[in-house]
Length: 248
Image (cartoon, rainbow, N blue to C red; front, top):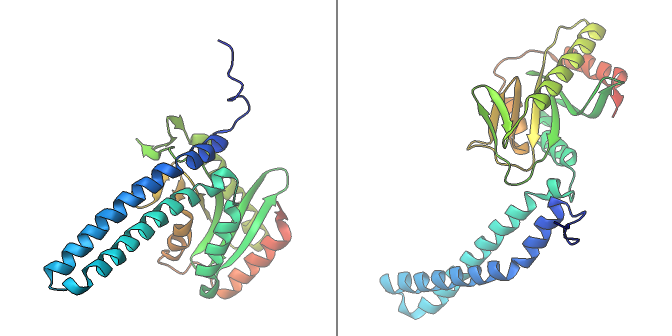
């Protein structure tokens, strides 16, 4: 079979955007139908409560709210794929969320750090509850991310390689910082998932790695229920990390 030229060289992201644009008329038709139903319900409610004089206005108001809500859901659905489509950078999004939630609680966030020739990460978080490394990743919107029998899966593929890499990176970073500061530390690896199907709750824990929605990373860090480091230790670890870890 000869390859169809219109498919050659086209990425899944390109086709996703193409189909999204082509489906716009169908989404608008659906929105009109939903708004019409909202109008009927609004009028019926107004009549039911004896507000016949403003029934049409109430119907129009409810129809507008339904249409706006439906548009918002569509917009959020498309925006949720932005990192996967290359329209936004996951590390920028996560960095803002981390600093916004943790900055006032004594945590420091170092972005783009690496042990030369060995490993690199997007974010290193140091604070009262301990240390975390966070990387960012994105899969296609229909990729199910789950744990079965203790194994990590991305769709039908094993996620062991991804988990092992981040676990080993966290161990390498912890070994370096412990050696240079003489403060024994462990580092917890997190993976911020910007696109893909996570289970209800938005968190999967498998093979030593926690995968979660970016907005939940700060929440997980703050949930550490013990004080592992004092202010002096945090400052020393931060200065050492800034000095010893190269910018990725």
